[in-house]
Length: 71
Image 1: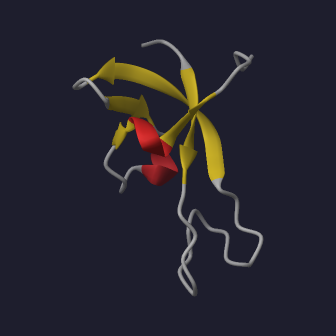
Image 2: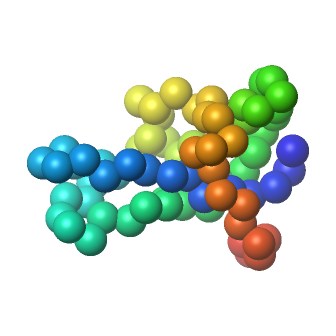
């Protein structure tokens, strides 16, 4: 808890993911703050308002640790 992570997005053909639609869609987006641990491998992260339609609980495999603390 308290760390920052990137969120993994799986690009799919002809599907708009996080407002980017092309071959060069990013694999990881944002720097999000971990709010709490829900289970042994599940974390709840703080998402911005524009991503409020996405459920904020993710498995560890969908997250990548951010090494620097954003300022």
